[in-house]
Image 1 (cartoon, helix red, strand yellow):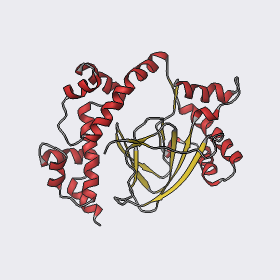
Image 2: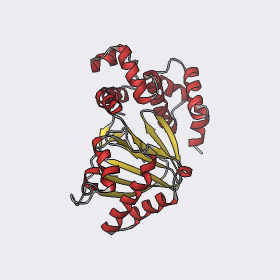
Image 3: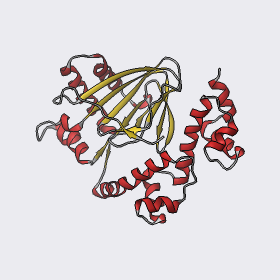
Image 4: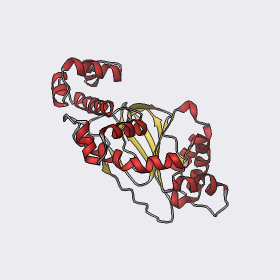
Length: 282
């Protein structure tokens, strides 16, 4: 379950956008693996529902929701209902550059490129103006580059009030910790069922265990233990969809006991593993 890099080829190097329209149904075969890429990605749920997984945890997305992934963000999306559909836009901020002094360059493209501006990670339908949906619709349905480019600029301007501006101290922290966080994330995703000690993780990134804990907490908002548990529970849902038994899943993922696994699964998902497994078989 290790993350891999996904390449998107921009057919026209002078044009900064790729758009994709995906219709899915909830099957084991229709599973986007955990991945990352060098460009930005905006996903809009047009119909149905999807399950989004990121290192900070998994969440449900419903029609009208939007999620935005920055370069190197680890993520995957899986359909959670029949008839689900999402729209994706991939873009490189370098190719959205405007002349110096232009409002868009000064307020959006420039700060996005130098890292002082961060796009919102998740927007629920009630948080978004109608214009955002209209801009996404133009991007997906129009085949004319001029219309698409204009819609992309308009969309970015609509998102601007919801972006986060970082000061130099924040930027220094992210730059300093990002390589270590990424290394540990990849390692844990590849070894999620193993008993991994904090000492082992700290040794991999040449940091003191206490310092690593503090950095991880600040960067992800959770402890390393909580992250590993969430990672296992995410994998558990996939195994239960394949009709493996609760005890088989618990043992395969390294949980200390079946009861412990049941408690953690119910706390995160609101249903027991058995109930979830039964719902997948209906």
